Amino acid sequence: MYTLSIIIPTYNESDNIVKLIDRIKENLNPNVFTEIIVVDDNSPDGTGEIVKSYIKNDSGYQEQKTSSEARNNYSLKVLIRKGKNGLIPAILEGVRFSKGDYVLIMDADFSHPPEIIPNMVEEILADSNSIVIASRYIETGAIIGWPFRRRIISKCAAIIAKIGLRVNNVTDPMSGFFIVPRTLLEHLQIDTKGYKLLLEILVKTKNLPIHEIPYTFTDRKSGKSKMGFNVMFDYIGSVWQLYNYGRGRKRQKK
Ligand SMILES: Nc1nc2c(ncn2[C@@H]2O[C@H](COP(=O)(O)OP(=O)(O)O)[C@@H](O)[C@H]2O)c(=O)[nH]1
Ligand SMILES: [Mg+2]
Image (cartoon, rainbow, N blue to C red; front, side):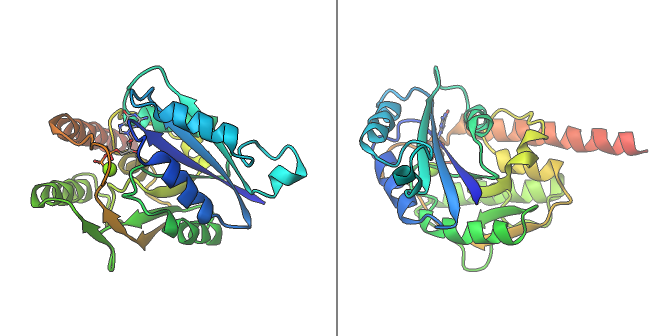
């Protein structure tokens, strides 16, 4: 049986995390063992502790130790880091800890609907050495609840990625909701620290097939977004770093 590891980075998601885990459990693929890993940066609102006590009270939390637990078809784990140290480092810690054949990354704030996970899993099972991206910009995908300013920033960031970094075959290279084979991440050195892990993966693995699944992104209803000026500067820094990476590779080829 294949195993899927779902990595959920959290920072102050106490209003969302339990509901999210429940919704993920409602959308499991019966033919895939799902390992849910919450990576919390020691949130002041106690998100990590909430998951810990959820695990205690949830009969399905442990790995498949007994046959009754095996029936649950999933496991739930929480990593509590020392402090807030960037989104990508948190995700990568979850990836290192994970055991699945495939790794799915998603946000905890319901912007990424768990209902489309089964479609994404079907897609990666059909083409195991590919990248499956949940996309807001492919036909029938959408964004609800973002102000004009944020839409523009997101679109511009995607255009910069397309033109500047030559990530042409993807409509939503900034998506935070995607699946990759875990071995791909094992062999990839991730240099940017900030925020857009998928973009770096795409820049560094240009030859892999990509499948995009449309979805409707809904802005968070509870909690606070981390998007601010620092995130924008961080993005510009990442693009510059990845741009230089591309140029360095070209020079090597000559
Ligand atoms: N572990 C960890 N998670 C984070 C950090 N910053 C944001 N997150 C989580 O990453 C996801 C996306 O963050 P969010 O604030 O919703 O970003 P936005 O959707 O771009 O506005 C959410 O699940 C957050 O809880 C961080 O520094 N550490
Ligand atoms: Mg969000």
